[in-house]
Each structure stands twice: as C-alpha cells, then as structure tokens.
Image (tube, one colour):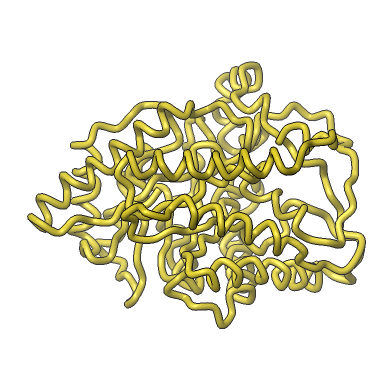
Length: 374
C-alpha cells in the first residue's frame, strides 16, 4: 500500500490477494474476540476518508506545498495545544503518526463522477466471504462522509455546487453497500473534532456550520433506508488532554436530524464517560439506536470487563437496553501506518468489550445477550 501511494509499480493481483487475506484475518479476529456485528477492518484503504479520491474522477494530484510539522490528526495549533504546549511539543517530537501513509493532495479540476464501482464491490465481496460460515448478527462497511473535506475546488462555480456534486458521487458508494445487504456506516469525525481547530469560532456559529453539514449528509442519504444506516463521529485520534472537546450536549440535537437509524460516538474516554447522564433529560427519538463506545482508542489501557459492564449497564438503564448496541469509541488505526494502538492491544480491548457485554447481559437480561459491534 505504501508503494502504491508513492506511485511505485505494484503487482495488482498480489495486492488484491493480500487484501482478501487481511480482511479474512480481521474478521476472524473479530469472531474470536466475540463481536456480533463486524466490518472489514478497512484494510484495503490507505485512510478512512482520503481513499475516496481514487474512486472519483475529476481530481488532479498536486504536490504538497506545506512543510508544517505533521502529527497525524492532531492539530498542533488547536485549542488543546494552546493550553498544553509542553505536551504537544513532546508529541511532535515523538509522533506515533510519523509513518502514516498519506495520499497526495488532490484538486477538483473537472466534473465529479464515482468510478469506484469495482473497488466497492471488492470490499463487499471480501467482507461477505470472510463472514461466510460464521455466526454473526450483521456486517457493516464504513464509508466516508459526503463532505469534501479532503480536496479543493477549481472547477465548480460555487462551494455549494461542488459540495452537491461530491455528495451525489458518494451516494453511489452508499447505495452499493446497502444494495448488497450490508449496513452502511457514515464516518464523519470532523462533525465534532474540527471544533478544536476553530479557535476563534463561537459555539453557536459552529453549530450553524454543523447544521449545514447535516443538510448535505441528508441530501446524500435521501431515499436510502434509514434503518440500515449508522452515523459515526468522534474527536479524532488525539492522545492529548482533550479539555477542549465539545460535549455531547452541545450537538446531540443536531445528530438526531441526520437520516440514520443508529449513532456511534465516543463514550469511554475520560472526557466523555459521564455523558450517559445527558439522556436522563434528553429523549431518544423513536426508532433510533445509540452505539456508545465502551472501550476507547484514546489510550492503550485495556479496560477491565467489569468496568465495561458497568458502563453498559448505566447506558442501558438510562435509555433502555433495547435502544443500544455497544461498540468502541472509534477505529484503532484510522490511517494506514499509524502506530498509536498496537494490534495486540486493539484485539484485547475488543475482547474486553465482548466480555463486558456478556457480563452486562447476564445482569440485565439473565439469558438474552446484547449485540456487540466493532
């Protein structure tokens, strides 16, 4: 994958065979961990979002002009870094994202068209084949949000026209996943994580931008089966103090306007573990399901299953056990090449998630187990 992104020749057949093997390995590990709802690990993609640029026509590669120090998804100039400069200086000097595979910047120079049909069908087939013969509840494929964060526009007359064209192209991938009988997960961390970088923006102005974001997401999801769509957001891959994070209360009403049946978000890291209390006075809309994280990607400590069970019970007793699926806060390596969470730690966390769900189910249901999603 690193050679491909560097423009070097790669044996395509060998690469695709390795991707198939890697998906099978990932699904096998998820089965061994005890998960009920699984995905492909996104192992065929260089990142959770920029992968889409090779699935759309209309872009031109431009060499990166910036020499700014890079620390992966952490903003060294954001709100948190301004409060804790010594910590972020350390991260800059010892970045776990130093070997991240980065896609070259692209600029829209022509009409956008989705041309990734072969690749999305590969993802679908790899996941279905890996799930075959195993007793899973369901499978889902993540797909990046329809917001064109990763590229600039030099073709369309306005930002609105460009955004609509991008959303229309993304819709092709969404439909392919749903037509295959899999769940679709929209990955959109920027909904909340971008707050850290918008240091001069008042919360109300940020909320207005979030409302506009929801309008575009719903435009891309129009007429698609809402109950087969999950929406995921998070605060990025930041091992920092995280004092500047938005709180769920700041945006929960905006989340519920998204045309999705389930909402996945961070709930296990120390800045957000308390947010189950929000639903003591916020009503979950009818037909909606929450997927709060019960193990976190924000540190390498492996949660004790009893602590996971306690978290699950708090959420279940607050919003109703029938209204939650328990998951992880976010992916453990959202960009290929990241080294912040070693695979052995990630699998141990997911085993703790499943064991915690079994403990909580025994207490809540006696016999009926809760579903667990990775």
